[in-house]
Amino acid sequence: MTILDHFRKEEHPFVEQALEWKEGVETRYERKLTEFLDPREQAILSSIVGKDETVFLSFWGGQANSERKRAILYPFYEEVTEEDFELVLFEIIYPNKFITLSHRDCLGALLNIGLVRQKFGDIIEGEGCFQFLTTKEVSMFVQTNLEKVGQASVTLKEKPLHHLLPMKEEWKEKTGFVSSLRLDALLSEMYHLSRNKVLPYIEKKRVKVNWQLMDDPSYPLEAGDYLSVRGLGRRKLFAIDGETKKGRLRIRYGEMLET
Figure 1 (cartoon, helix red, strand yellow):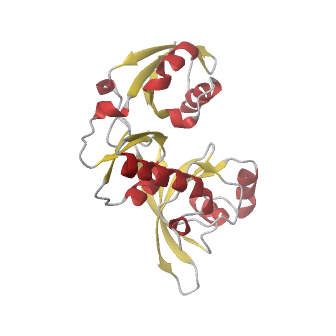
Figure 2 (cartoon, one colour):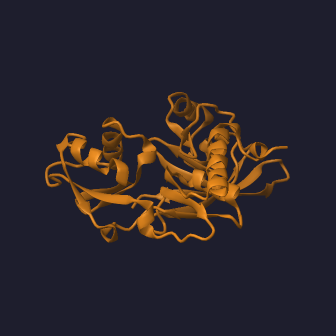
């Protein structure tokens, strides 16, 4: 058995990359600053580094409860500060009295200028504005090229990191029963949809598991997995609490509340 056997097949490329990062710090004693990682990638990286006495690991995404964070792997004798994560905070200024923008609009605009998702962190909505974090290396490119979001002409204002709006994430815990841990069964339970109505969402690539598009209805889920359906919100499988006498699985899951 190898370390890859402990992870899903689709996660193997990231696992192999994480192993390379760790080996680089071990052999060359040079720190490694990653791009923004989603929570699943953070968990994988944490499990690979573990309690290593040579390689230390720190995460930062602007605030303690940031969803997307950069990681630094570094030799045990070094110290890491928040400045080492090289984050740049931008605020999107637009005529909010006349135009309404959404998180999806901002995400689409950043992707449309050629950025990959790993180059920017959380997108946070404030009172009449949006903020987002990006890496220092692409900040000038973003400031030069992001001129429109949705139907609005926008300007970007760089802000000190301590002006970052608070990230709010609230979950409403629920319980349910499913026949199996297949993706379609869990979606049906968590979103209160029939199996027939779940399948079109999967087939039309509107479903993500741990931030990755998933088009296999039989894909098996595990405790800790995140699910999202475009337009219907996000869920998280907290735990599998056993089996009923009729063979159904009792689950606990969270529904992310809109803030």
